[in-house]
Length: 487
Image 1 (cartoon, one colour):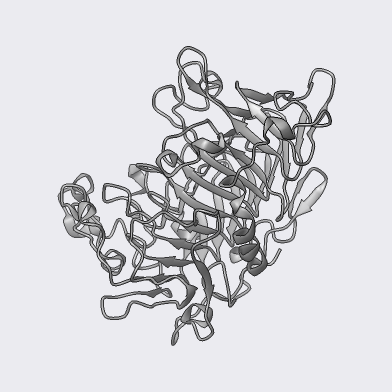
Image 2 (tube, one colour):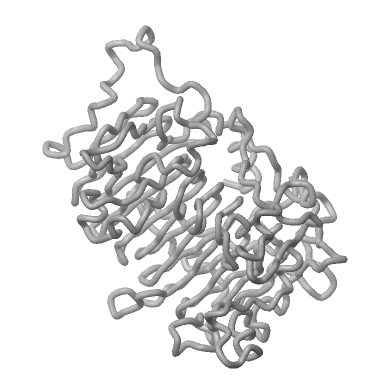
C-alpha cells in the first residue's frame, strides 16, 4: 500500500478502539460465537478467529508449538483483568504461528475493555502484549492495533518461566520476538500506549514498515529496539513521542548462534523523541555494540539529540557500532523554536542543559561516567563526527529547517506531547510534505540518498520474507526524507 493511502486510511479507521465496540446483551444472537471460546488446539492444527468477533482473554493465552492461529479482519482481542494471586498481566504467548489479517476498514484490535481506554491508563501497562518464543517460526501483524501494554513481568508470568524476561525487572513490550530463524512481518499497524518498547527483537528476520508508533515507553524504551540475532528492514514508519529513541539498534549478546544484528532503517519520520526520558539519554536513533546498520533518508523533528553512537571509539569497552560497515547519514533534523517543558530542563535531570532540539542536535554529549581523564577524547566517543551525518541537514538556532508539513506546526506543539490522536481516534496531524519542502529534495549540496550501492539496499527488497505462504518485500528507498511525500 502506498504511504499516502495508508496514512489517510489510518485517520479514517482509528476510531475503532475509542468508540463503543462491545455488543449489548440485547444485540447478541445465537449465531455469534462465545467470546471466551478460544478454539481447540488439541483437535486442530489451525484455529481461526473469524471476522468481526470479540475474543475475551481472562487468562494467559498460548498458541502451542507447531500450531497456527489466524485472526481475521475486525476481530477484537480484549484482555480483561489479571492472572493469579500475584495479579500477573495477561500474556499472549506465541509458540507456534500467528497471522493477524486485518484490513484498512476492519483492523484487528488487541486492547483492554472500552471503559479502561483512557488517557490515565496510557502508561499503566494493563496487559502483557504478544510474546513470540524461540519456537515461533512465523508471525504476521497486518492492519492491527496493539495498545495499553506494559504490565510488569512477575514470577509466574509465562515469559519469566521461559527465561525471556526477568521477574520484577522487566515490563512487557507490545511485541517480543526471540527466534533467530523466525520470519516476522509487521506492517500497516498501530502500536501505541505502552510502558515499554513497542517492538523488542531478540531474534529473527523482519520487515517493519508503514506502521504508526505512538507514546511508547513511560520512563525509558523505544519504538523499535533490535538486538543480536536479527536482520531487519525498518521503513516508512511514523514514530511519535517515543520516550527515548525511535530506533535503538544494538548487537548486544552477539554469539555464534545470535549473529551480528543487521538493520536497514530508511524513510522513517520520528517526532518528539527523547524528551520524556528524564536523563541525558535518547533522542531519535541510538546505535551501539557492533550493530551493522544503514540509517538514511529519515526525517527527525523536535527530537532531543540527533543520531548517537556511544563509545564508538571504545569497542574494547563494549560500545561502538560496526563503524567500517555502516552508514548513518543523509538524514534531516528539523527543530522548532520552543523550549522543553520547565520540569525537563531541570539540571538535576539533564546534566547537559539541553532545552531546544536544535541545541541537542549540535551538542557534544558527555556523561560523568564516560568523562574519564580525557574530556576531549571522550566527547568524540558519543557523536562520530567523522562519519555520522556528514551529509545530513541539521537545524541550528537561526535556521530551524522547518520541513513544511501539511498539518504540524513544529514550533507550537510541546516537545513532550504524545497525543497523536483525537478523541474520536482520528489523527491530529498530517506529516505529508507541502510542495517545495526541503525534505522532498534536500538543500544545496545536501541531498537524500539516491544511489544504488548494494550495501544501502534493503535486506528483503528482492528476496522478501515468506509468511503463511505469501512473500512480503521491503519497499525500495525513496529519494526524500521521511515516511511521507506530498499529500
